Image 1 (cartoon, rainbow, N blue to C red):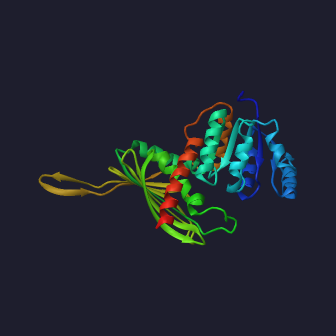
Image 2 (tube, rainbow, N blue to C red; image 1 turned 90 degrees about the vertical axis):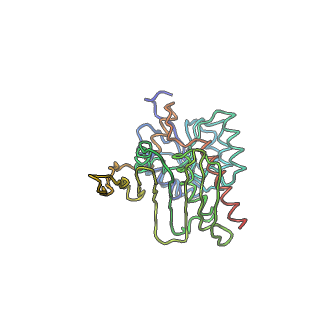
Image 3 (cartoon, one colour; image 1 turned 60 degrees about the vertical axis):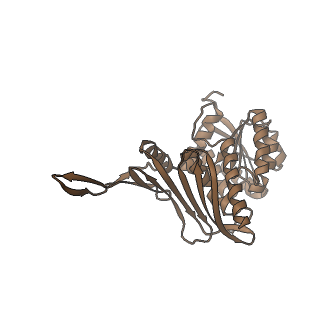
Length: 321
């Protein structure tokens, strides 16, 4: 596809996240927002007027339309069904995380997408958080990464009733752990269960490269936290995802001077993070991929499947306790 030709995009699902997708897609000059759809036809119609697009009344029309890309921002339980309907008809698909509700569904969708050569991007928005992108550059320059800690907490929202804390929150950091440290060879986990849903989880991932990732997610905690802390041989890195701040502390060193020991104190350095919206960066990258421009940051269907495999392992270990 010519990069000068607008990408014809359809959007299904106009909940909180769907409306954010709508806002950003409407901003992009490279996008021709062809239609939107939601079960709430009245809401879709009102939003279509505001954003100068068409509101579909029948979801099946979304899969027979002449579009280049489809954005799926519907409840997780519907992802597999809509992906199955779209693959083979629409070449480029963006689907919110998690890719599907179950690992079995994800494996089926992955095989189907590979068969048709469909370009699927998973909504792991934190990869596009400017703080995470800057953190990745700092880690690349570090002498050796030993361990990375991920903490993500949020009070349970009344709008989330179909997924546990692992599929809702922890999956973001599972993806980041694999993105930053590579594939995983061992998982251990424990957690807390309420009403048959896991609402607190803590996991240790051992990566093939010997690094460790410790991930904690909670929907019990009132305080909202999004942070990453990395322990390296030469530095300690503190990354605040909400405030988009990175502090790098160099390790203290002890040197000899005329036989008398003295200590050089640790040096702290604040790394500048450019103020950019992650959702905008995410969609710009997705649209570019529709035009044939590859970006290794884009989470593809393999990434979506791997994250769900780790989720499944953590869930099984917690429920078995």
